[in-house]
Length: 149
Image (cartoon, rainbow, N blue to C red; front, top):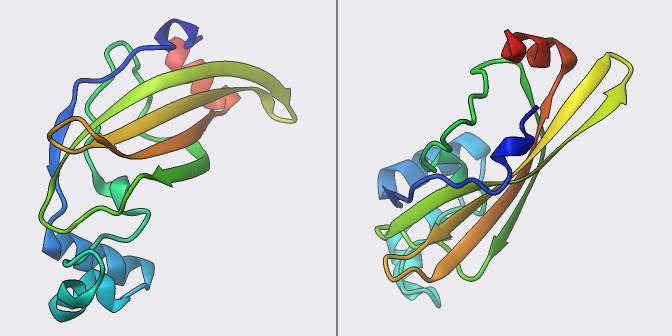
């Protein structure tokens, strides 16, 4: 169904690690560690500034992968793994993009399900990799039927 999307990428999109967004995110996930929200703690840290929580890249725009037309509702979030080369620094600009790594189908109790493996990337403005995120999106039989229409 989506095998023709394997290997396709989105264009890079510039995102900013904004102080206010980091604070709101830290509050939302219940982790108000001072390294995220206190400017003095950030200045005294080994990073010399505040950093973002590890799952903060969830809020970034990764662009659109052409021909990957997923529905807005009905998808199941299967798994998400982050790998960092270094923390995200508050105030920096990040270039983000997505790539379809794989797609396969399996039979389950409620019918055939699709498994879409996406990899997201975050780079600095010099194209140095900062983080990757791998995620699995599960597409149920009901959603797959809607996509075929």
